Length: 116
Image (tube, rainbow, N blue to C red; front, side, top):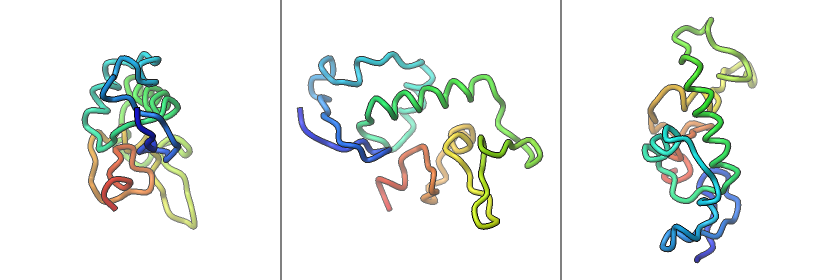
């Protein structure tokens, strides 16, 4: 086991990827859709808190459609307003279905933390 940081929230974690059955992440049961989603990200090791959060966001996206029009977006769910600008949330980015690799502030795919 080696100390690392969660590639999402930057919290210190102990990763046991080389002995995955002993890793702390094995204590969680994630939806198959969450596991599939994580396979599309740039994340390496995530803490259990972030894994739970990702699982909840995936669950939300399974029962809610991606907003196709601005009028369908819900403030606080898909965006918030900061200094008169729309800022898209992690939930919005996850529901979008792919990473644009532009280093978005709330990139759920881990692109910003890994490459910028």
